[in-house]
Length: 190
Image (cartoon, rainbow, N blue to C red; front, side, top):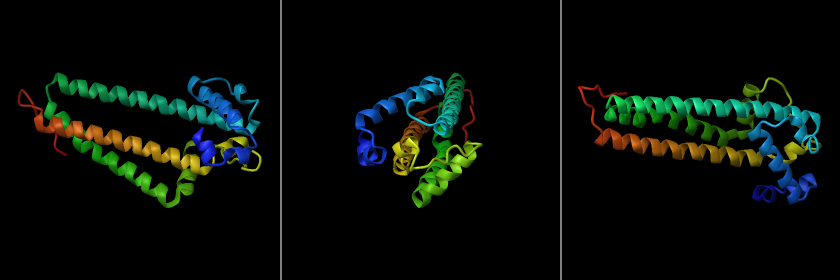
């Protein structure tokens, strides 16, 4: 994996790229498939495994939130279409995304100013224990995933969301300019 070479993880961990890739595959399977923490036992100590159990719960919650949000968004769009409020939908999409632009830009700027502080806040908010406080001298998990790794992942996530917002806003703009409301529909104004 490129990030392991980029961040000299082989030197830090004393593991080969092949070993690190094998461990990474196990971690991804563990998180995505909801496997038992015992699959991590050959690689990590008890504290790391307990933290990964917390991370797995966070992943499940994140996927559930994503799926509920997607369902509600699609339902709202379908209702706009059924009631022929194309222009109203365009207004809602176009103007509604400004709030999210602000949220994601603030997160991005805050992370550039002091990533470690906000990464710590993230852990304090989403974890009710101190298992996330791993020792870089002894814990393989933090050796494999240094702060720079999380910074690059965070930036990619923010950029993905900003790109998604841009697409939604463009679609909203097109609908707003070309869409029509029928039956005396009220155009949403923000």
